[in-house]
Length: 176
Image (cartoon, rainbow, N blue to C red):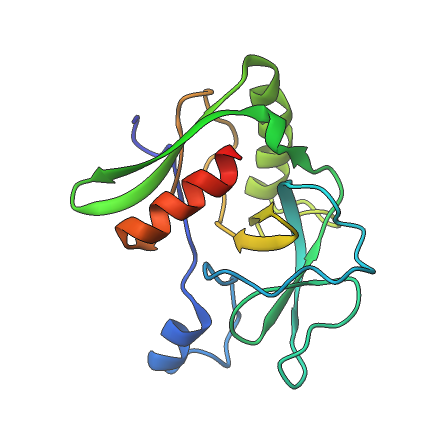
C-alpha cells in the first residue's frame, strides 16, 4: 500500500474515557453500533458520509441517527456509496496490526472518491465530521476518518485496533 492510503479508525469512546478526554470533541467510535432505527432513511448497506455526531441520551440514539458504541450517535449524510462498489474485501496482517483491505470496482472508485473528497474536506452538511460510516445489515460497523482526498481502487484499507476475528468479520460483512 502506498503511504497515506490508510483510513485510520478514530479512538473509541471507552479509550477516550480512559484517557480522560471523553468531554472533549469526539471523532466517532470504531466499535459496532446499535441497529439503525427503522425510521432512519438508511436502508441499504454502503459507505455513508457522517454529517454530525449527536450524544446519546440514556444509551438511546435520537430518531434519524445511527447508533454506535459509547455515547455517540451518527447523523448520516446524503451521497451514500453502495456495497456494489466493493469487488473484494480481506483481512490482512500488516506490520503486526490487522487491517481490512478493499478492492473497489472500476466504476465504484469514482463514486467512492466523490464521497471521500467531501469527507476529507469536511464539507457540510453531508460530511462535516470527516468520517465515512460503513453500514452493513442496518448496523454501523465502523466509522473511520478519511485521511486522503482520493484513492486508487486497490489502495483502500481500514485500520484500527482490530484483532484477527474483528478484521475478518468486517471484511466478510463488507464483501457481502
